[in-house]
Length: 115
Length: 115
Image (cartoon, rainbow over all chains, first blue to last red; front, side, top):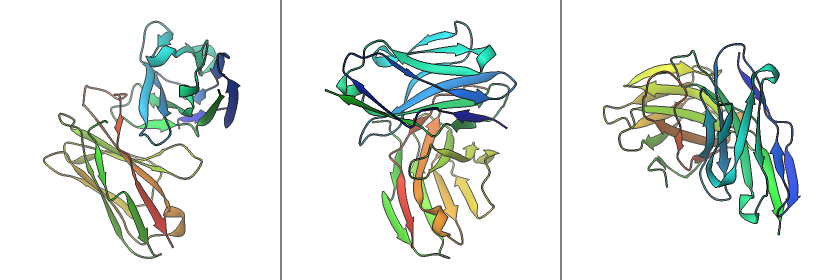
């Protein structure tokens, strides 16, 4: 069965600091990987996704993530965070060889940015 | 805004009762997924509907059931409510582009409290 682990429940950073949020998944086959974000008072929305090709994926708002197959990881990064990045971040995985869009989410990481 | 609407936004029920939650998918989307998000957790996949048929199910008991209508809107029904069913229920629609892993467009959710 697929599962997703996010290592940090709550991360606190100052503005302009660099960010890396960890994500590991367990599934032996082909995977599709996602990061979703939920800003305060808003619905969940897609930040970026990896299906195939270049393992370094760029998303919206300067975020990027790197798929490392050997480590079953898909860590999210941003070189310089802003106060507006305060949100809850969810890593998610889908079995790429499945005909169903069953997307499994991690438990989330709350990011707080000090102005 | 995603164009996915859910109703009601909040609901209070007592243990043993039944509840129906509703979701209108974004225009052009024919796939609807339902998720349960307990406080402090990531969304957990309940099931998915594609062209009015269930197309994948998570680890939820049969008292969680659903429907999808010809206009692709959907309902989630929960019978014999238990206290642990208290959660935010999220609906997400997606265009069916082939095999799994399409981007999900989430609604704002229905907050269900079971007393």
